[in-house]
Image (cartoon, rainbow, N blue to C red; front, side, top):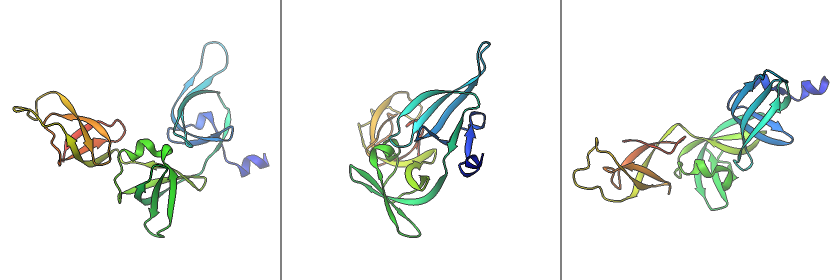
Length: 194
């Protein structure tokens, strides 16, 4: 009981999307969970978890009431400096302290971040591990095939476009290089011209 007071434990009935838990020494973020009470046998919790070390998503089932170490998380505003192929580099805007986070763990987030932009870096147990993005970002289109005559805002169809971050997404036919567009960071979908 004394150990339980020192290490904050979280039970499966306290799960919330976005919580971080320690499962067998590995830190995971809870993406989804579902409590299941079958007619026969004990209740269990079906989860979808993202491993914070490499971003892999796994499905895992736990017994109802099972306990895990709750992981302390903190978010800090930082400026994204650059990615060098190995690490992504960030700078604390107040202390000017620079940190490096392994690029593979941030691969999805880096598609939507431009150098010098302010982001929230997530620290897990004091170590930088993830970037929390806003739900939408505004980016410039650097490459896109020319639109055809008669393409209008109401016309259907899409074409690939390369954004300033290097991400390639599908955009309507009327979008041209040099225009700024709004993109949904959760799905990678085009939303509107800005």
